[in-house]
Amino acid sequence: MHVKIFFCTLLLTLGLSTSDEFTYNGFKGVNLSLDGLAGITSDGLLRLTNATKHAMGHAFFPSPMRFKKSQADNVLSFSTTFVFAIFPEYQMLGSAGFTFVLSPSKELAKASADNYLLGIVNMTNNGNASNHILAVEFDTWKSPEAEDINNNHVGIDINSVISNYSKPAGFTSDDDGKFQNLTLFSGELMQAWIEFNGRNMQLNVTLAPLGKPKPKIALLSPTINLSSIILDHMYVGFSGAGGSTYSYYYILGWSFQMDVRAPELNLSSLPSLPQNLISSSSEEKQKTLLPWLPLSLFLVLLTIAGATLVVVRKKKFSEIHDDWELEFESNRFPYKQLHKATRGFKDKCLLGIGGFGRVYRGVLPGPKVEVAVKRVAHESKKAVREFVAEIVSLGKLRHRNLVQLLGYCRRKGELLLVYEYMPNGSLDKFLFSETKQTLDWSLRIQIIKGVASGLQYLHEGWDEVVIHRDIKASNVLLDGDMNGRIGDFGLARLYDQGAAPQTSNVVGTLGFLAPELARTCNVTTSSDVFAFGVFLLEVACGRRAIEPNKQESEQVLVDWVFANWKVGTIHETKDLRLGEDYVLEELDLVLKLGLFCSHPSPSARPSMRQITQFLNGDASFPEMLPYEFRAGGVS
Ligand SMILES: *[C@@H]1O[C@H](CO)[C@@H](O)[C@H](O)[C@H]1NC(C)=O
Ligand SMILES: *[C@@H]1O[C@H](CO)[C@@H](O)[C@H](O)[C@H]1NC(C)=O
Ligand SMILES: *[C@@H]1O[C@H](CO)[C@@H](O)[C@H](O)[C@H]1NC(C)=O
Ligand SMILES: *[C@@H]1O[C@H](CO)[C@@H](O)[C@H](O)[C@H]1NC(C)=O
Ligand SMILES: *[C@@H]1O[C@H](CO)[C@@H](O)[C@H](O)[C@H]1NC(C)=O
Ligand SMILES: *[C@@H]1O[C@H](CO)[C@@H](O)[C@H](O)[C@H]1NC(C)=O
Ligand SMILES: *[C@@H]1O[C@H](CO)[C@@H](O)[C@H](O)[C@H]1NC(C)=O
Ligand SMILES: *[C@@H]1O[C@H](CO)[C@@H](O)[C@H](O)[C@H]1NC(C)=O
Ligand SMILES: *[C@@H]1O[C@H](CO)[C@@H](O)[C@H](O)[C@H]1NC(C)=O
Image (tube, rainbow, N blue to C red; front, top):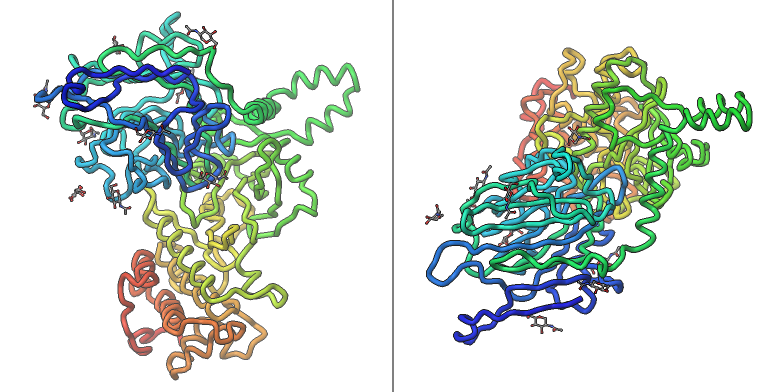
């Protein structure tokens, strides 16, 4: 590693000193300004993030660069090159991504890692011209909010994560002029060049696999007048971010120079990547190749062991692949891998049996990630195509209160859906089981707020409105921090599209079905709100929506709570196991909000947005009297 520092004579005479060039072939002992998750490993790698979700890291050259000559507005030429590799938590999925960034400040700590903001902006200042941020993003997640083109692209971002220019990652080969794709999150080493020509204002971004000379044709080469974006002095560096999955972003070497082309990196003196990452990613790769092997396996085994064994084996792991599925290839898990992860779907690994099928706990080989694998029966071939498309697209929804879908696998008559594993299981176990320790009030409120925010996201946070249709305590799962996460979203569609072997059209659970669904099959967000209201009552009262063993007036939870409200005893419906551990105002809010949501008339119910405002105290809950509330309704 070698650092050259040049002093700009003009600045020297002013008594200021600044460097305008550096070359790092590895970062051992290098003084960078790091924050968040960023660090330099003992091997001399710059690692922007570690295995922490919803978090970010930044690394900046410690002193600013001068991008404009005094008095002049023109932005000077600059050039940088770096070598990087991305290792995602799940081989099939990326995570947010990383950027090379020019920023007026090294303090990007107020930026947000979440979802799509890449650690350069937050929800408030995204797109604001006063940011003065120029970033080149290496984005491995398709975020609808950022209008991303795919989950593997390079983009130029001005003050915003909505890229001004972007292209799928890849390069144009100098040999044959053909475009070749690169997968950013493959763990392969790649080199990027970012060059701005101050005279013709062309900003070139070029990518290539490590070891290839810089391709002559750039991936992106727009002409941009940067003069109002770039300030006289700017810091240069990187940001890396992870959302509900993480990635490791490694930078192995980096050079930068004002005015002329950045110094070449000495590729033979770059540090090496951690051995365990490399081996686990190549092991994974072999695993994904396996489904393509059966034919050769067949031939080899035929000679060794005879036909019987092979047929059995082939059948055991056989999957269905159709042409239309190619675009979902990166979301697919090999059946054999899931079989192994769940030890052959042993009963010992069975987590539960839900409305859609059996759920198994599994541990993926390699990175040893825990997952939940749901086996769903399906019949119609056509419907499955739509369903897979939808489920893959829903899998891209990310919110801390949704159970993340990681991928799928398809066999004859069966779909396997792979989800994040939720170590604390489903909420109903805690609420209704005599044996499990009960939940204290503050946890219940935390779970309620989380589920409300997740459901609001399903209703409003995506291009299309996603209606859950089966909100209830048993579909709320608890993660390691006891946050409530909504599971099974999107699965109701499987019934709609006729793919699931069930004749009834109404999806949902008795006791949670909005009354209008009995008349029309027109599900809306307010039928979800109805079910959410019943869910609120379940949590506050610690009992199920319908309990046939109770005396008649208490069988239906909503009616029972409502009847108590009418006579002024609503608080007596609370879960007795809470004892004195509850906040009266909160209990009152949850119970009344529960009734408000389960109002018989859909138009009278609040929206999920209003509900989260009530729960967070951002809007005051309307004081209403019981008769205003359910005039003419069921009571
Ligand atoms: C990630 O880095 C942060 C900050 O350096 C540290 O506090 C945290 O423990 C690290 N987490 C993991 C999982 O390595
Ligand atoms: C690193 O650089 C900063 C900014 O130039 C400086 O304040 C700090 O003293 C340097 N640290 C070391 C260990 O050289
Ligand atoms: C967003 O970032 C800006 C600029 O860094 C900061 O002033 C603001 O407080 C941040 N907003 C939030 C909600 O964190
Ligand atoms: C942009 O940011 C500035 C400074 O933080 C703020 O005053 C202004 O209101 C913001 N503009 C918009 C449109 O949000
Ligand atoms: C591109 O950048 C400019 C800032 O120069 C911004 O105002 C504009 O909205 C951005 N977006 C697109 C799509 O051009
Ligand atoms: C490269 O990726 C794009 C989509 O990102 C795809 O349309 C194209 O077919 C791929 N090309 C090759 C040669 O794989
Ligand atoms: C930028 O890219 C364009 C198009 O690929 C190319 O013609 C031009 O020579 C490049 N400029 C530099 C400085 O490499
Ligand atoms: C670039 O934009 C600035 C103001 O934003 C303007 O003064 C300048 O003339 C522009 N340069 C060119 C070459 O158009
Ligand atoms: C590149 O690094 C290698 C190994 O550290 C060294 O032997 C070689 O001299 C370096 N090459 C240049 C051009 O600096």
